[in-house]
Image 1 (cartoon, rainbow, N blue to C red):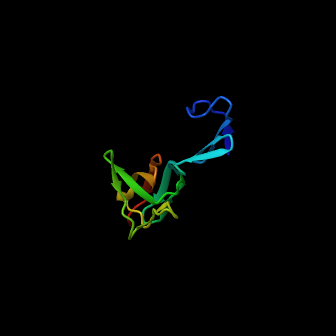
Image 2 (cartoon, one colour):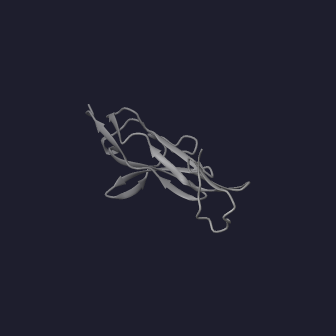
Image 3 (cartoon, rainbow, N blue to C red):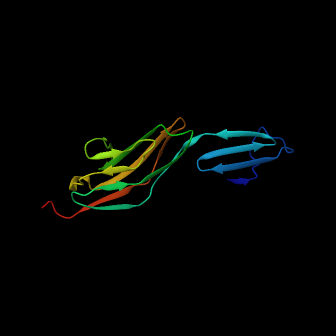
Length: 141
């Protein structure tokens, strides 16, 4: 945890000791001996900007989520013409859950190629990763 002084809180007097800590996405304000915890939207990251896969093979798009309060939903989207299209889990797509946020694509097809983002939601709101690119190569035969 990182601690640092902070002087911009209105309810603190000049004699009170203020410290701000940040652990992942959790923010903590310590005033004298009182501790205040603030929730924040999830921090979401994909671990690679590009995932190459051969046609017909399996690829896993790795997503890491830090969240307080805990995240209750994870959703993957494919970006098509600038719009987010939800990836429906089932058949060839698995994962995309709070306990397993990564997305696995089985038997990759050429129409799986494109940009994807991972999102996570908690009581404070929704966080989103940067885009990652799935690059399908090879041939159908």
